[in-house]
Length: 328
Length: 143
Image (cartoon, rainbow over all chains, first blue to last red; front, side, top):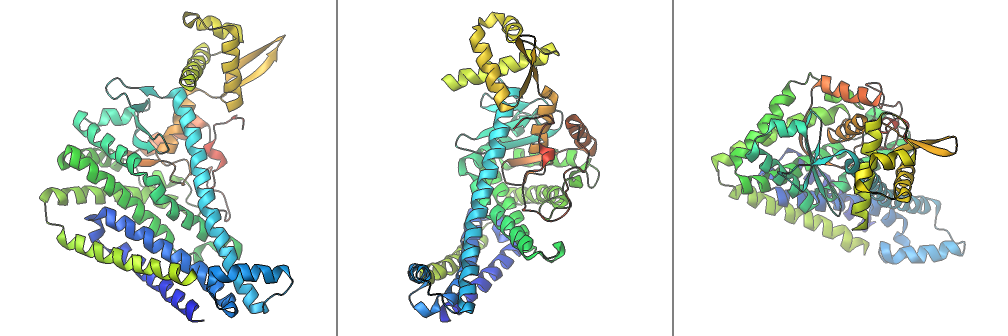
């Protein structure tokens, strides 16, 4: 029971750290450390969530979860099942573990499929621009610039974006996109996509009304999504200067403002994740990024943010080490 | 090298079909691409592949197959833009966007290009998050 109590402590502490991360502003000045902190604390949360029922169920074996599982399997094969309560706990733990893995796999497979289809279409209808040979151009008046991640990532801009930006600004945007490709930010985001899917699945299994789902997984997803944008912004402004990046962001924001409220939110307001909020939030994100780049232009020192970031990361790593140690 | 050339050919064949605005047989496509000096069987292979991928549909006319694009070039571009602008309902971090800006009017035009209703993808009831919705597919796509 001690193990389960420790794990419960880790679960609560991870939740508290995530709560703090959601409200923190230092993360803006130390994006890489903040992203690592999110990863570590998210994994700690998931491991303890899976570990608590397993630890309760397997307690009689007295040799840690990973050590006890084979013994339990051997007993079960011989038809010796533990007490019903323990058995239920073990099943719940195993179910959570399977769901945890399955949501990651399905998220990845889904993303790979969407990308493959997107890539195939790009090959048919996108053109190459002489000025930027490694970039695909889509002939469409709406402004968009994005990275199609993969083993060979592709950067795509629309004709609308080309018209919107001058040369220097375009260079900053492309450098931002290449940063996404280089650091594989899609993989950074994957666990949080999986987490949202996991919550959705649990909700579906429990058949609880839509409103009662916890909001924090989605907020966590949004926070990490914003952080990877800022991280890519950092790379772009290091190469091309904060002024150009700010100008490019500003241009996107200025045309975006013309969109009537809810224009982006038309999609999917009904199905839990994303939907209206994706449109709305992303506009917020743009405003936050502009604000941040301006702040960086003013050149205020970031030592406090860095110190906080290192502290948060150490806390997260301790939290992560605890379930790994306890379960092993 | 081979895949690159094949991709290039697929694109050329699609362009030929889109430019014609009418179904075409293998021979007609080959004639249209005469400056590339392609073998009849090459064009046939490429059209086969495109059919397999669902970009082209074919039907028998007499003794030959007649091919036409499944959707217009504009519809495909619209589909890519919907993905890019995160309007397609796919939320699997498949793409990482710099920023996007789209007016309501543009969004409507994009959807109209796919011939789908504006709110078509918000299905009722709970379902696993991020599942691709039908609305993302180009009409008539074969998969």
